Length: 228
Image 1 (cartoon, one colour):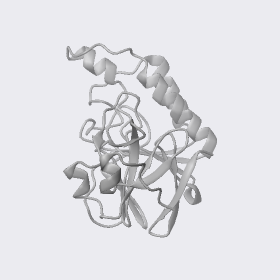
Image 2 (cartoon, rainbow, N blue to C red):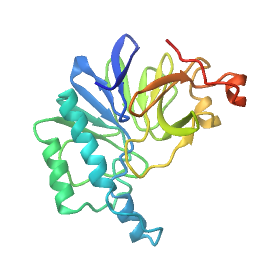
Image 3 (cartoon, one colour):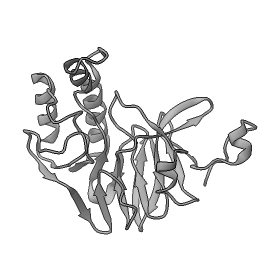
Image 4 (tube, rainbow, N blue to C red):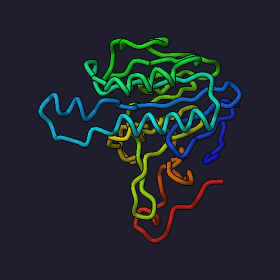
């Protein structure tokens, strides 16, 4: 499996190259910021017209992760839909319903989708599975897993979504196909994460690098050192 293994609060976790988080001992898969229906929302509000395939692409990757991990439980950490009026095509809705079938599925409320959608599963503000808490926006306290910020980092001139991890917090990358990102050097993120935080870049091979690169790396003198 395409993973980077690490621990938080003595919990063994796997960061998947897709941007999902796997907690193998609980058969749990966590994804954040799917933003399903973004192209439909932009067209509805008179924005740029985007090819309307992002929902299918996101669902295909989610299905692949569920098959690979065999996860029996799923947590979607908010902004699963691009707004409270998001519309899915009937085939997409049936696809999502099939993925949810026979799984313990939790929708955590986000700022884009604060109201429960007309779907099954549990709809919660946050979820605590000791010793970890799962919420959309990081509170900065306790051992928590959150999303919202869509962190991204650059490696070898290419921007990639990334997980941010320190001794108490994980900020998830956006899982959705049509999602932008916030550089991990942004003050909103550096204020939340400890100085020794790492960024786990998604992709064909997840790579962990310091969230705050050395001065030499920032100047482009060489690649950032990999963290063991």
